[in-house]
Amino acid sequence: MLTETKLRKLRERLLTRCFGKHVFFSREVGSTNEWARELAEKGAEEGTVTLVQMQTAGRGRLGREWISPRGGLWFSLILRPNQKARQAAKLVFVASLAVAEVLHQKYGLRTETKWPNDVLANGRKICGILAEMNTKGEYVNYVILGVGLNADFSVSDSLPELLKPDAASIESELGRKIQLENLLKALLEKMEEVYYSFLETGFPPVLDRWKLYAGFLGKLIVVREQHQSLKGVASDVDVDGALIMKLEDGTTRRILVGDVAFAKRQLNQIE
Ligand code: BT5
Image (cartoon, rainbow, N blue to C red):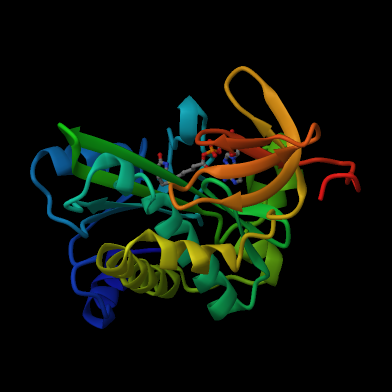
């Protein structure tokens, strides 16, 4: 379990320029994204992290709930990229790529990125990312990048019945506990490396790396938008971060906001 002492030691070993140099830690808060937003409003600098043992009001996208029992890695990162909002919206890919790479490289998990904000392990959701933004005109004031990673708890003991079939945790996949502070260290280092690559060389190289993990590409999926569902093949993610879908009638659709689920039946006629 994460403790103040372990985090103090972690800060001495952390190989980053600014990510995690300031870590605000608590046993329990409502949402680390909300806590980070309050700090950002007071001027907290880029790289500041809020981290907790458990959340009582963890949130997902579109007002959904994020279940955050003890043993998970629940944290948020404050970023202040000097960018337009449209570009900064792609930061969710930076975080999901970092998580997919770290879980694969450090623990050998078969990870996948799933558009727009999920990381899967062995086909089930192990991590969700919530990016929230505050803007000044066209430009970003700050971005809060929230990472919810099911780590040191067992899915069957700690998540509600409804979520169990589609959720994974590191403990359930590996059959053992890990050192959460070492995972946090690896994640902050990877996230910073990918973030600077994004700032210096732009989104396309990050997207190419992200696509190496994008197991949903080429598969038959159902996308739920606000008012409708679309079925078709996920053919690509473009340089704006939009999902490109080839529908059953042969037309192509570009989707900016939605949820992807895998369709049960694979259609041969869609190439
Ligand atoms: C997400 O939303 O996947 C973003 C989750 C971000 C959580 C982090 S934790 C740290 C930071 N502070 C916060 O308050 N939030 C961020 P979305 O794509 O909307 O997925 C939400 C859906 O995932 C829910 O409706 C459930 O179906 C499912 N879900 C909830 N908790 C889960 C869990 N622990 N593991 C797997 N699936 C879960």
